[in-house]
Amino acid sequence: MNLRPRAAVTALVAVALLLTGCSADPLAEQYREGSSKGFIAGDGSWTEIPAAERGDPISWSGADENGDPLSSEDYAGEVVVVNFWYASCAPCRAEAPALQKLNEEFAGTDAHWVGVNVRDQAANATAFNESFGITYPSVMDVDNGSMQLAFSGSIPPNAVPTTLVLDRSGRVAARILGAISEPSILETLVRDAIAEDS
Image 1: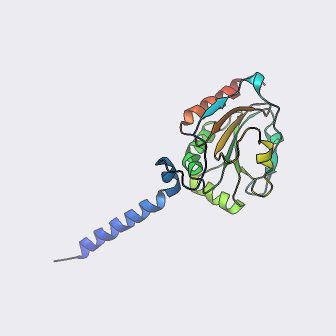
Image 2: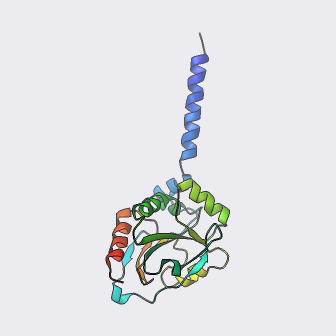
Image 3: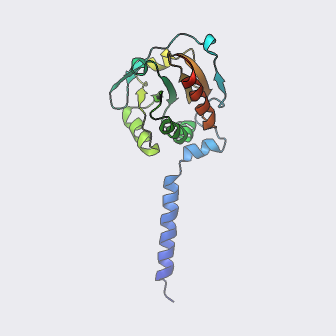
């Protein structure tokens, strides 16, 4: 009996299983299955704030994962989606593809995406971006927490991820606490902010 074909098939199956294991994201899968091990997150609830009830414009600044400066002045008069995240946060990993897809969908419009990395060093953030295909910048906020401080009235402590939509004046127009489970909700919130008068 010739065992070569059987050995070849066994090797191919082993390689396929190995590749499948590498392509899966265990933390994101853990989150999708409902496990909250190792993180505290919101429940995905969202709030849209009427224009007359919004607070003052939020001024913020920092440096991105490449060390380049980034600030609210760079986005004056435009809608900004601000997503607070870190690389080992399971719900952050689960929502990353949807955020990038929406970022691409709104390319060339008056809406822009900015991440705020609350725990990682630049190398970890860059590796995350490469892994998930993220093309928008993230302010690295681990050392001084200035971004978290600037938005402290809008994001509860430990609620990561949190996504904010800033109107053209730089005020918080909407907030999603926790992972974005329905990208269409964020899409609608962004479109509503774009449609508003400045």
